[in-house]
Each structure stands twice: as C-alpha cells, then as structure tokens.
Length: 220
Image (cartoon, rainbow, N blue to C red; front, side, top):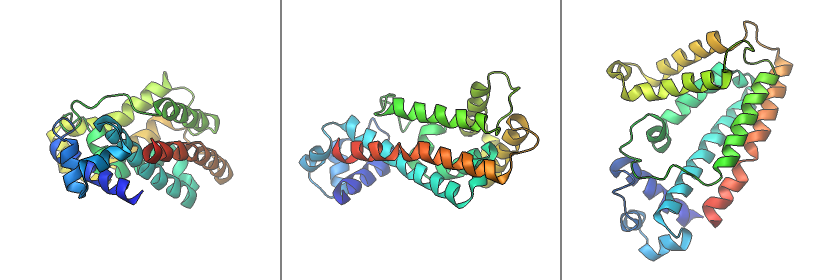
C-alpha cells in the first residue's frame, strides 16, 4: 500500500502541474522512483491509475468531513456543511482542479468514475436526510437543483470573475454559508438532539462508501 500511495502521490503532483493528457506512466514511475512495470502491477491503465487517485482524494475528503461531524454534530446544518466542504476542497489541489472549472488539468480525463452510482446514491440519501430532519426549507421550488446550483456556483466563479481572486478562502466560505443559511434553511434550526441524530445518520451513509473505495484503489 505504501508503494501504491507513493505512485498516487506522484500522479497527483503531475496532474496538477502538467494535466492529465500530458502525463505518462513513464513520468509517474520516474517521479515515484519505481519502474514502469511496477506501476502496471497496481493498475493496468493510465485511466485506472487516475481513477484510483480520485477515489483516494474522495476518501481523504470524506474522512475529514466525518471527523468534523463527529466533533461537532451541528456541522450537519447545510450552511456549515457546505462551508466546511468548500474550505476543505480548496486545500486539496486535485479536488480543487476538478471543481473550479479549470479544464486544463483534467482535459482528456474520462468523466465516468468507478463506484459513481454508489456515490450518487449516498449524496441523494444525505439530501433526503437533511430534508427529513427539517434542516432545509420545504417551500423552495426544485430544492435539489437549487442547492446544487448554488453550491457549484461558488466553485465555478473562480474561473469567471477576476474579483474572486481578491477574497481568501475563508471569506468565500463565509459568503457561501450566509447565502445557504438564508436561502435554503428554515428560520429556526432543529434542536441539538435532532442535529445529533441527523449527523449520526449522515456519518453512517458516508462511512459505507469508504471501504469499497479503498478496496478498488488498492485491489482494483
């Protein structure tokens, strides 16, 4: 596993610096200090290697989010959940290039990923839990679309508005939290017991994703 992680570390660095299309298995092997054949012992193709990289990045993000939910169940409030995620993703170079609209690093990378159906199901289950626990308003038309569009916009604006560069990550996250809080959440949030229950259920949803992710990365 240590050797596999060293190869994935090299792939992550080269993806951000050169872009998917330009990176070769030879480049990755050289950067990781292994032979080209060693890379193929873990993943048969370049696409599989980068699929594994993205799954590993997803695990790191999920583990960070789950730790925060365990530390403070009130993080389950949508404005805090999305704000925390925004800051966390911005600190992860690979995830950042995937979500900020900069197509150069990922040009040529296949859109489909392993276990994508499980990921989408987990996201839907999380959204349904937020609604069932009264953490989102019930009068917003097309609520799933509105929430997705609002959240995505804060990432994509990076490449569209030059003024976005003038704000630091924390300021952007605070703006996102304010808009979500006032646009999508009810005026009075649920009490601590309801928040704790919602957090526990969402933790369980995303905990279920990590083992199959890890198995795919290291066992293919």
